[in-house]
Image 1: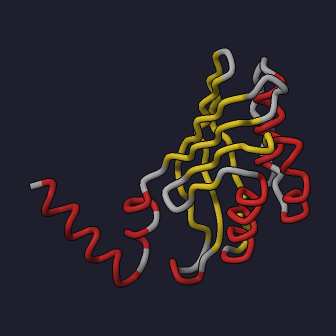
Image 2: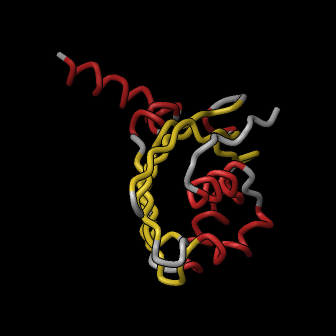
Length: 149
């Protein structure tokens, strides 16, 4: 089931949402339409500063995960800045059967030509990923309980 793209008055924001919600491996050759040549991308595991680097990050996603897709939940924009909240859904047998969901957000900055010059993803790797791994997950949950007192 495909959810409708979130409506937003800024066409740059709509373009980003539409791109990510429909992202396929074939779209990686079109990243230059969305990102400036020297765009910076950062997430909990990667930091790259150009389109070839961004392409490698997304290619790795398609190589390592089954059926990856993004669902944008909300978008706030002001001037050349935007913040999206999203769910990232994928299949990863190491994490168990079925679909895994990571909840996160992205800080985006648009350049003068409307393409992204900054894309920074925020999500809690410990809660959203490590706790779901069989061996590490038990340790992470134990540490979390101990820290909570």
